Image 1 (cartoon, helix red, strand yellow):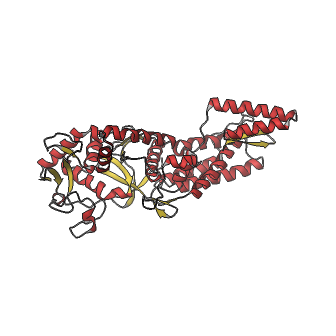
Image 2 (cartoon, one colour; image 1 turned 90 degrees about the vertical axis):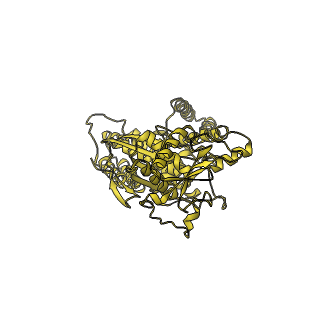
Image 3 (tube, one colour; image 1 turned 30 degrees about the horizontal axis):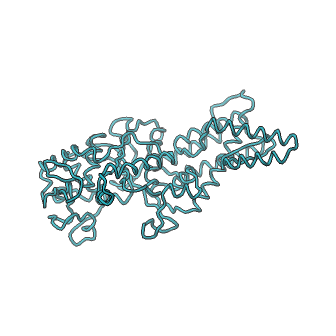
Length: 465
């Protein structure tokens, strides 16, 4: 079996995935901060994390994936205070909206979704270990990590931070820090904020602390893969390494895998530009979940993606070609079932190229290109009458096989499909009777349900718009 290679930010090179426990890959993915609806850039990150999981499972690995839900931070506290509610009341609608959005985009749910506020004891235990090993100090009731006690700080990002550096302001919690690089582990209680009593004093956890505590609880002190967007490399992931390895003395993560940013119409997505799109806004604009999913998959995760309405239109055309080809294969495969064979030259070539592309750092652009070469060559063979029923079935089986990774084929609804077939049969009967008014009416009814008809020599085909 060929081997999966991913670009490891830690070593700055592509490496073959060799899990610490043979056959079992353990993944921690940085999840949403639930103070608002997630935007399309967030969803791209979650989507490729799911793609990684699916592909490793397709390659016969067992995969355990954990994704955190950050339900306490400065923004959440501020907004909850403004609304006069507690953190749970404020965040719960956004937690549910997050799950609805990923379900809509066919992003499979992780195995575990730990919430920060449910893991305060684990975070306090981690701070206690760091304090006993001399990595912390107390200032104004807050506990800080002293970066000077961790000589390997910066090994992930390559960033060297000093008091004169612009980065000294990135994690600037207070002017009372002993060093600009130091970061808060436990923040002292402020008036009006929700807090937890602890041996460290009344307060709440810092942002970086939660991921170390929860990932090690569910995946162990050292695990295989940590995913996230490139903007988390520094300081978040760098700080995770410092506090985790400072507490355990062991390597924290073997492979760090980061996805690139998403631009909108060639411009960085930002609130100031007003170009942040949520999934809900795109759906209200008439775009389908599959179009959005395809557009996000079309560019490899380590390449910046220019997301535009044109990219969604391109996705629609690509999906129409794919669905039409699948329909043709289904028709061509309904012939004589004698002479069954394990594969065909077209399906074998596609499957080999698909696997080579995905093995190479999840190169989805190359994998999708291979799919459309298959569609082109398959349509040529169908047009020429050179595709035997067994070959058509073989190609269709391979497409459905890889769709377990890509998940871009339309899903069938047995009840809806039955209703559509009845309407099509009634329309065909009306055409036989030359009742073209009724035939046109039924076509319009189907179109109102998002069904497009194609009348061919082999009969009437239909597909979803």
